[in-house]
Length: 122
Image (cartoon, rainbow, N blue to C red; front, side, top):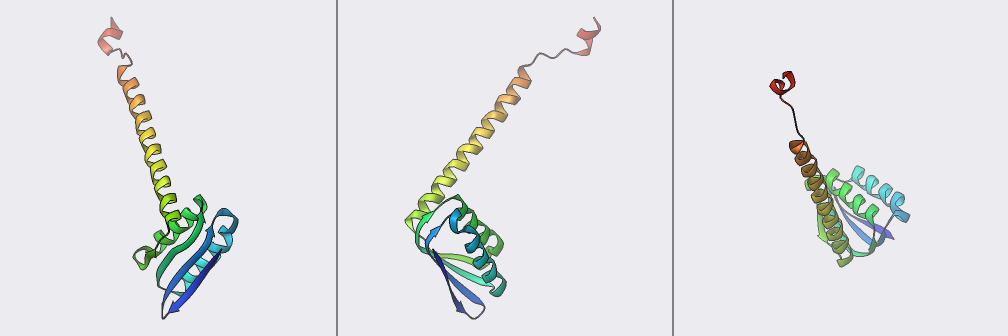
């Protein structure tokens, strides 16, 4: 696991190599935060990633969301692409499941017999 920082003025190219996993998460987070304090824009090269887990995906997501338009992924790897697709698919399935549960609750509420005030008075 390594992150190499290549400085170019106020910009930085982050070259990831090896694993972005829970095992290295804290160390990688420190490197990324330090770089974000020193530089204003980033090119991210993920082509050397050989292993990534949910913590790694989350770490890259935080980098991208905090850096916004100043972060550009310039190279990826098949491992990162596959993990991202699996995560996206599982999020879609989870959101579909939540929507289905909401629909079930709404339908059960609609079919529940309600008495109106005229029937209740009789």
